Length: 307
Image (tube, rainbow, N blue to C red; front, side, top):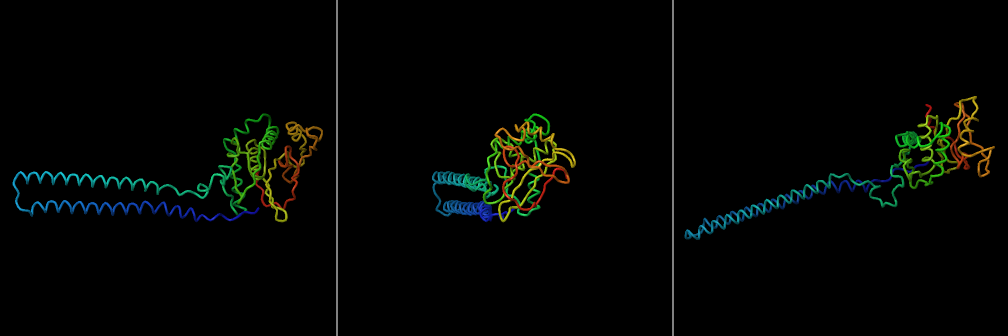
């Protein structure tokens, strides 16, 4: 498996810094303007009152008129000051709310066309141990997988055969671009979400097998001579020294495979993996399981439900 390093998140850091500094700056400006406005109004009021007290005595009617006009002006000044302060408070609160929003991730800032097709997908870890653990977590069945499995009739063998046929029929192959991505089986079973590369197919088939109660495993292999690796799902047909023929016959009925050939006249030979734990059927290769055509490297990891 070859994976690229995590992309640089410098843009995300710049976005966070900008959003958190902006409300502080606006608050400082608002407070400065408010302070200057208050000082100016105070000075005006003081000069207005000082002018009346320092001037020559005026007739009583004129003095009363000046007093009324002075207090009216003072009241208007106070109302204007209160309105200005309230406006700055509201602006500060709005900007603070903007600054408290989480910074947009690199994926959110990217154009819609460049975002991952699977909404629930996420970058796979680079190290092999983390990679396999994340893949195993994605393959754990949940309520959506449970409902998907229930929609198919028959016993375990018939269900698994029908599920494999449906996945192959509906699947849209989409290789990862840029770096490996994982998508949980709970996302893959949703309408229109059966798409991705080999590890996504393996994730869904493994999850369904586990939900049915069939022992399954995902086998991760490296590429040959620098080529791409591969992930496949295998299901246990029988224990060691047992005959897998009866289970294969039940599955063949679902796949319409008779007398060693399918309905298209192609050989109905199945890829079997004989191991110390039993005989596994490799769910890979086409409308009915068949041998994977490309040459692969060594096995890098095995994720098994039986351990």
